Length: 337
Ligand SMILES: Cc1cc2nc3c(=O)[nH]c(=O)nc-3n(C[C@H](O)[C@H](O)[C@H](O)COP(=O)(O)OP(=O)(O)OC[C@H]3O[C@@H](n4cnc5c(N)ncnc54)[C@H](O)[C@@H]3O)c2cc1C
Image 1 (cartoon, protein in one colour):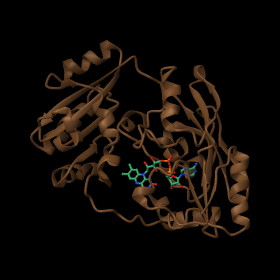
Image 2 (tube, protein in one colour):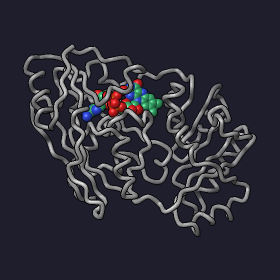
Image 3 (spheres, helix red, strand yellow):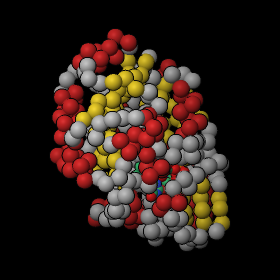
Image 4 (spheres, protein in one colour):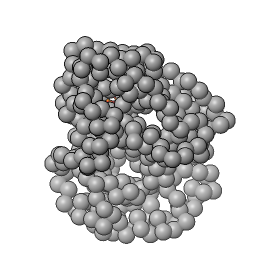
């Protein structure tokens, strides 16, 4: 299979247009981090953004950044951390995933509770289409989108519509201090009740996950279910948690790295559960389980794979961008995720 590694957005657009003109199918990716799980897409040509890894614009005082899609997420996070800033998406496969791959798959992690997902954090984008165009959507200011925001279509499109070339993010300052607490419970119902109590209070945790002991690994959590909280702020703000939750035990923040890599470590599947049946998902899970208790999404090891079905509207959008089905053939279904 031929492999192309365009170094600029124009080269990316030319690569797509060249393949389209020759009716060649394209397997599009960053570092192809997840091929082992999903199985490689069979295609004539591989197009990787891995040579597109520049920072195009970064003004820390404006709290915005523009980077090329192939920039490794770990490098991106390190650059921001040097200015005590962050894009708190916490993607799994942290060490190998790219900015474009994270945005294309709309992956988020525990801090989604407070900061949202890529749809909340991406303020602009440039993407290359099969006709060789580079399309600009949004920009570098936080409120700039009128009408249809094309970036929202590309976020979560799994490379089935176009190739993301450049992503602009709004940035969050890192809190002065971050702490983690564990609360142990004998039942999922009690853990969920505590979650409700916390979320209805003045406390604003960045993350609120529920997990079972198997998922906690070496962190020695004793309850049948543990409610894990992460909060950031000044020492005075964080002391409020100690006062409001005397039963909560402060633990090492490093547990979040283990939780971030839960899916790569276990091959767990995402089970989207309405808040109302989170209790069921937690109780019925036979293996390790981690629930994003603030957003109703749970990851369950050993859960059967669900085959996502594209909606009629997704099929129409796919037809608009890629009528010949050249981009990521066989993965168009994933665009329904
Ligand atoms: C529970 C769970 C299950 C997952 N299962 C899968 C899975 O089965 N397969 C999978 O691929 N990912 C899966 N992911 C997402 C995975 O986390 C990310 O795909 C990966 O971390 C991104 O790595 P990468 O940047 O190397 O992108 P790649 O692994 O190279 O690509 C991942 C996907 O994003 C698309 N993509 C990458 N870069 C771009 C770009 N610049 N423009 C447009 N599209 C792009 C690719 O076409 C592909 O569909 C899963 C995540 C979770 C939480």
